[in-house]
Amino acid sequence: MKKFIAICLSTIFTLSYANNILASDISLDKAIEIKEAKKNRIQPPQNISVDENIIIDIDEQTLNIKDSAIVYENRVYLPVRELSQALQLQLDYNSEQKITILNGGKIQLPVNENKAVVNDKIVSIDKENDKVGTIIVNDKTYLPLRFISENLGYNVSYSPSSKIVHINTNGKVNVNSSENFETEKQQVTETKLNKDEAKKLYKQVNEAIDNYKNVTIIKKYRNKLELKENSNSEVINTLIEGKVFFDIKAEPKLYINEKTILESSEEKETINQKIFYKDENLYIDQNLNDGENEKYKGYVGNKFNLQDVTVGNKILNENLIVDGKFLNYEKENKTYTFNLDKSKSNEIAAVILNELDLYEEDIEITDNINIKNISISTTVDNGNNPINYIIDFNIELNGQGTTINLSGSFMNFYENIDKTEVIIPNEDLSQYNKDINGIPS
Image: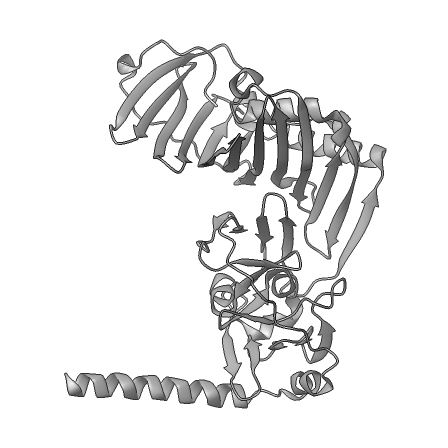
């Protein structure tokens, strides 16, 4: 045992020594210059705690960050080690100078400073807010997620109301390759859109999606419902994740495989569901894991438009658009963001509630509707083919002594366009009950 411990200690010492050698070989002159100037110094934040509601998606994958993300100065931060693992970055640290070093020195961030070094140039971490920088919280070094991601050339969007961060690294090379790192930073231009321009582009995006005849859709729907009635309160979180495979070019084929998780303070339910189209009919196979493992096999019928079931993205029509903008990434994708007319709160809320399978008679609130946030964003490639379609929302409903707050997002990601292979399960259709009305959500 003593020999084993000695070997472990020797290994740890060797790795630590090698790490210090690597960090010391990197030129830190400009990072030290930032520290010595002192004018870029920021005060460590006080009383900042982990925000368990932060959701971070990187290329359709949700990070498990429940115990570490924070929001400071309206910016999302992650611990340096967790962030480097999420974005696959080479990480070093100069303990003497207290400088975080990423990708062989390509990015250098002195602790408690609002400046950093990127490709041997001193830059502001946040041009809009000089309080944003590398910070220490609970003895951990935290880095601003947007700054790091954008300096890797990634597309980042954040909705403060729904607390969802979307990072798109689509088309990028492995960021561990220091030879490629300098070419990954892209020129980004932002263009404002007036109402007519925004409506036209939004309509074009929806038409392009409707024209998909063969595609795989990765869907992620999240929402948080907070119900407050007098002194009582209840929070219900819903997560729906799954894939939709369909092909309507010749013989129509459809297969949906998804999971729904409903979680409240008292219980948690998981519903695994598959839907498929066979012999000109739609079938549903559902397994509810709520402690009783209920199962259901049902026949939906054939009175529907197959494409509406699979691609329907016109959740909000173009007449609700008031303006927008688009970010143009050099030689890469474009991301459009559309703002909606909040004065049409009743119409917007009705559509969102319908998408969540909630209706006025369910929540019994119509007195006052407050649209805190509602936005649509979509990323398209150079051929204007949509890559994703995202709606973020935060809606408050008040009435009859009750307040309901709904927040979340609908996210669809498109892949394998015109290449999707739809494999219909070989099922005994006689076991499916014919007692469902309508199409399942």
